[in-house]
Image 1 (spheres, rainbow, N blue to C red):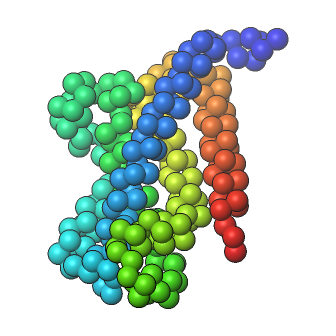
Image 2: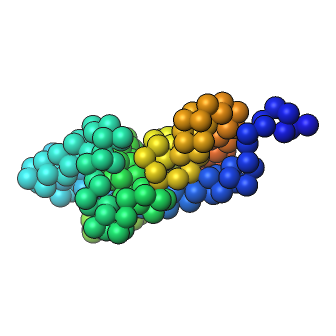
Length: 222
């Protein structure tokens, strides 16, 4: 029955492409989370009036974040081809997409981390300082726990953006559902393949949003 509506769909290819998309998303998301936390903390701590106030470091980190956050992802992939080839050894396949995915998403998430940290009551930080807490203790015991709902909410938004990035990366040979939708769907005029790939992408997005929202609600004590 299903073959009647989707005559050109090879379900083994859909499964394989889905696994590639999930692989790229998860690996890039984990790296983006840690790199984004580091960049976001640097932006917050070195900004005016904070623990590590330093105009030079803040300017350098802010410039890096602003530049790579502003470059359209499809252009970023092309710009990073020499770097990707040097790092991975090739410019096609799921692993070759990871550098661009991480470099494209981490600055985006870093700004969300910074915003989340700025929402913390300054009084809580001052109280920790007055009790003799070191900067690293404040980061571990105050900044991260207090901003956790915002951090999870931000990584959820970033995860969904990464799924979209993998689709764009697929158009230039990274594999995944984007590659399948473009090469085997659009290019060959097989609209049913494109439709199924799109539906699977939407399902992945809905699952990520549901998981992220559920965790955020549990962490948010307000």
